[in-house]
Image (tube, rainbow, N blue to C red; front, top):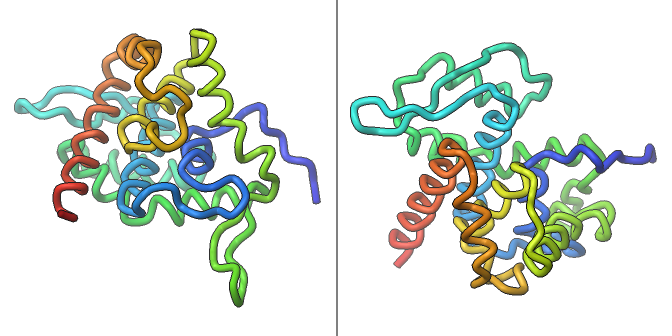
Length: 211
């Protein structure tokens, strides 16, 4: 098997690892919450790449295409194509729409990159990390940065925000009440803060609908 270069990781891949067990592939959250988180991470990847941003329209935040050129990645390309074709939808609509396939889309991409084993027959019906030591890296990076009050990159800060928004913080972070978490998220540019706020609202709605 070819060696995988993990220096340039994708936001949705990192979140996938955080919300799944690093050895068994078991989901750490309800599937619906994971789906919404990964949908948000796909949008986050487009924001980080400068392909979309957030603007207010008729009192509602909407996703606006900035650069419609090909992304070179099937997952983000599909999302971008939809947004370019129908830019009038509110932000929340895109989260709900992408959540329908986000988990499978991201898992397929990770399998193609050599990061996940697809489900097998018999007892192994989960997507399992190829290397548990690699799978634990995103969570470890966040926890160490929080523990030592270190500055985070924009991508890591967005990842942290989505971990909090999905409710995974209470499961995977050593100190989920740290003030450094709040300060890091608050320091993000407005489009990313809106991404996290919209995800938080969608997750809250999903939790209420299950009660």
